Amino acid sequence: MAKSSRWDIFCRVVDNYGDAGVCWRLARQLANEHALDVTLWQDELAPLARIAPGVDGKRDQQRAMGVTIRRWAEPFLGAEPADVVVEAFGCGLPEPYVAAMVGRSIAPAWFVLEYLSAESWVDGAHGLPSPHPRLPLTRRFWFPGFTRRTGGLLCERGLLAVRDATRRDDAAQHRFWASLALPPIAPDEIRVSLFCYPNPALPALLDTWADGDAPVSCVVPEGVAVGALDLWTGGNLAHPGAPIVRGRLTLQAIAFLAQDDYDRLLWASTVNFVRGEDSFVRAQWAARPLVWQPYPQAENAHLAKLDAFVDRYVGSLPAASASALRNVERAWNGVPGSPPVADAWQDFAAALAALDRHAAEWARDLATLPSLAEGLVNAATDRV
Image (tube, rainbow, N blue to C red; front, side):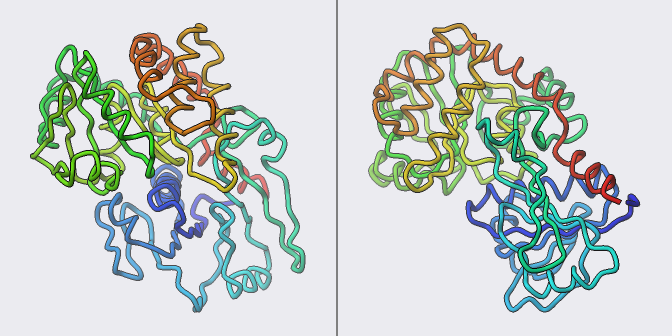
């Protein structure tokens, strides 16, 4: 397949910034690193506008960062099918579009981009074909993952080199924090970036930080954890430039960041609390200790994903550090039988030096896996 081939990515937003974030990163990478003509079809553009500079959430068609963006509305008025079609997260495709795919002399390559999971069954499911039940079309399942038998992860070329250069540059670090109206990190401070779903464990964690020995500054994008923070502060929410100090804790609100700036926040922070898929993957590339909140699912199905990742992640850690990480992950996610979040945090904080070294090793190992975008391009090319 020629490099100039057209790609369409279809996305329905379920997990606000996660779905939009993954699809936007993929679209950008395909366009900018593989010189492909990429159109992102998305039903809700407001979440994308918050993380992608130059995107207008009210416009039905536009271009930004080399990608064409079109609102996916119903009824779908039709478009010439692309050479390669990516159906993100099993969102389905518009029926008129599928019918037009059948009418092409060469059917498009059709990939179903699945959600990321560290569960072992993903290795056997990645890449499997799935014939359409009624039409002469075949989909192929593409699973992101943590082994060579999966589709790997999204990682732009040179990302880790830029991360390391930025981290070594003290002046750049100071400029970054200043751009957020925040001071540099003090020598004894733990700076936490917090991006989470509504979480009943958050007030207890804030109390733990406020009553602790080490100073903690918690950096929260506006609009995140509003309910818990409103309750904890008695309605006196932090705002950019107006932090709230309670005991040893300083709550620092910042404006919601574009993707590239959010990466820099993850690189610069001591610990990253992340959620869903997009921020979860970026926190791993940041090579800092992380605490993950999977997207909540019915009957606690997300807890199997949590345990599968933690099992894989702690594999080479000493027992005490592995236990500290596992306990804080389980406490944060309300796993039955987990320790109180206050106790889990104390052990986690004591293990931060070891966890920081491990995070760097983990990121280096991940970087040896196939790139998700490159794998898709190669699979589409090999198909012809």
